[in-house]
Image 1: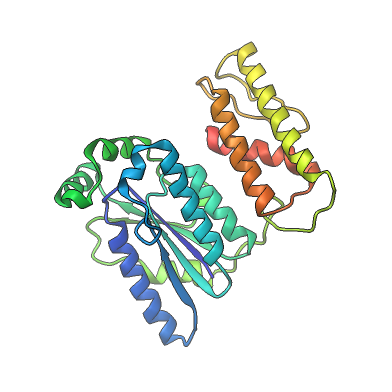
Image 2 (image 1 turned 90 degrees about the vertical axis):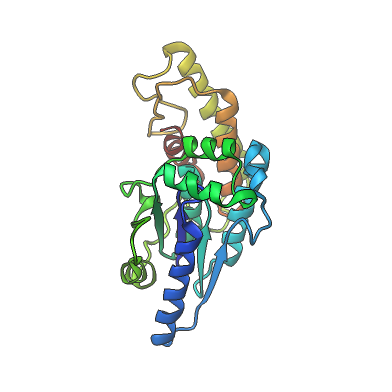
Length: 281
């Protein structure tokens, strides 16, 4: 059953909306005599403290815990609601891939709350809220969902003053909608080549090395760059992308596809290029 990804500024009312969505789903499923389990995953259920967002390494561990929990609980008979900041579009893409891999629908719920209001709510929570500096940094880094992106669609924005959330639309979209079939970037299949791991490692390394060479030669910005083995080109953003950032994206891509799925080795390069374009844009 579907994955419902909730995203919004810190202290913007996400958990309140999650409780409303869960209450609606329980009632609707009971009316239709459907037996499905509903799991809510959030920092509290995973014992992630708010101070984790002060440190990049701890925050990365927190995202890893959320992703692992979604992978573990999501199934054809389980509805999973990922209640969290989910503020990085690349992370929402990873969650989308988990749902796509098992051919189950997903949707994104965005809490439309002005920054000032969210900050006031955060202050009112006292010690249970985010540190003011952490709050400001999270807001600055927030990447708002865009329904033009397949991983952010269908998208439902619930404004802070909406008395009711669009329960019927969420149910129709997430529960009744037939999921798109898995594509080659997410579907699990038997290992087709004994050198798959080697090819995954070498292909991604060649691409980031070529990207670094390209930016050194041509500078940031400009035309997309051709890279080894790929027919698609990597965008050249108007900023210098550090090798450490590229290594981080490569490590995430390798971990996602080495642990969860085995890809056609002939398509690895194009899939990694698509992944980079998503995260570098």
